[in-house]
Image (cartoon, rainbow, N blue to C red; front, side, top):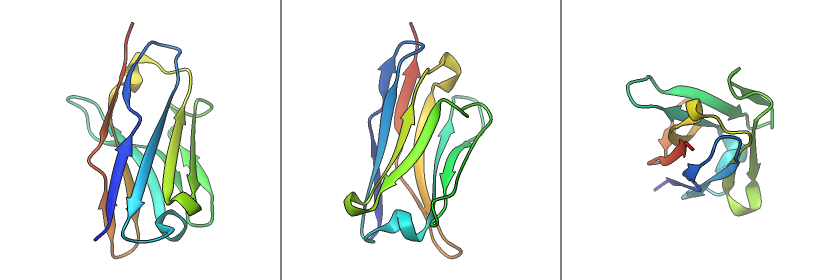
Amino acid sequence: QVQLVESGGGLVQPGGSLRLSCAASGIFSIFSIYTSAWYRQAPGKQRELVARITSGGRTNYADSVKGRFTISRDNAKNTMYLQMNNLKPEDTAVYHCNAASNVRDYWGQGTQVTVSS
C-alpha cells in the first residue's frame, strides 16, 4: 500500500522560508519512477499545481512561485521536497504532494502553510 505523508508546514512571516517534505512508503524510489508534484488549495479556491518533477528530473513551476520555490527529491530517502523562500500571504494554503503514472495517482493528506504577520 502506497502512502505519501507531508510535513514541514506551519506559520511563517512574509519573506520567510519553509521546506516541505513528502515521505513515501510502499514503492521504493517512487519519485524517480512517477511524475511527482506539489499542489496547493487555498480556502474557497481550486487546487492548483505549484511545482512538478518528472521521472527524468525535469521541473516546472507555476508562474506565481517561479524563482521562489524549488522542487527536489532524494531517491535514497524516498522523499520529495519543496523549498519555499520569500513566502507571501497569497501562498497560504494546504499543500499536497502527488505521485502519478498513467494508471496510478497517489496523494498525501496535506500540510497547512500559513503566511502572516
